[in-house]
Amino acid sequence: MEFEQQVEKVEARIRKACDRSGRPRTDVRVVAVTKYVSVERAKQALQHGYSHLGENRWPDAREKLEEISDAATWHFIGHLQTKKAKHVVGKFQYIHSLDRLSLAEEIEKRAKALDLTVPCFVQFNVSGEPSKYGLPPEDADTFVEQMNSLPHIRIIGLMAMAPHEEDAQRTRPVFAQLRQLRDQLNQKQIYHTRFHELSMGMSNDFEVAIEEGATIIRLGSVLVGNDG
Ligand SMILES: *Cc1c(COP(=O)(O)O)cnc(C)c1O
Image (cartoon, rainbow, N blue to C red):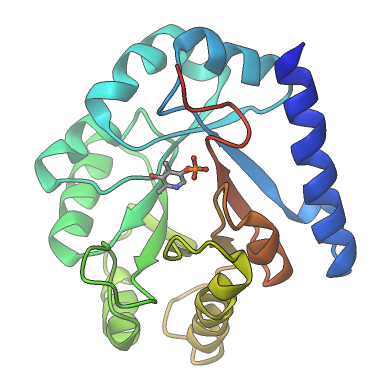
């Protein structure tokens, strides 16, 4: 019951942000981030129509993946160590944290062995905080160009995390820059096909991200909670 109310509140905020920016609600997909919560809570999210679930560490995700498996579409959203890619490819349908060539080559190798293509987001560190993962935006052209030669990876968009701000409005430039980066890469035709997705916005800043063009928001605490 409590969860139902939480869902209603968040959905109302999403709708309003969509309205403010003249976008249909169907433009924005929610990935329910279940990394803090139990398998039961993840199943509850599924029952409420959140069929896309996100996890950021393989060991923590394992139990949920085994229990829920293909009842959900799984997104790997956290930093991915190269040696862990073998656990992730084939189990998660999307990888949001592609941020270096060595990781791309490992994903390529694993995907090829399984005869599948992995849709990926290139993660950027737009704010330049040293503590954040992601490519510097200056490296975008070179990196995305390199992805052309890895046929088992398909770049479908870009991903970024904004710094935590008390005032979410201050995250706006980060999201706007990621959108511009996507548009520039497409305009220059660096990649062999256009890509559209922007994975940006979390509990603290999803409304601003929607206003700046997010197509995927990753919601943990505000939606499913963070207390197990
Ligand atoms: C944990 C996490 C989220 C969700 O965080 P909340 O602030 O709880 O919504 C989103 N994206 C990534 C990459 C995360 O690690």
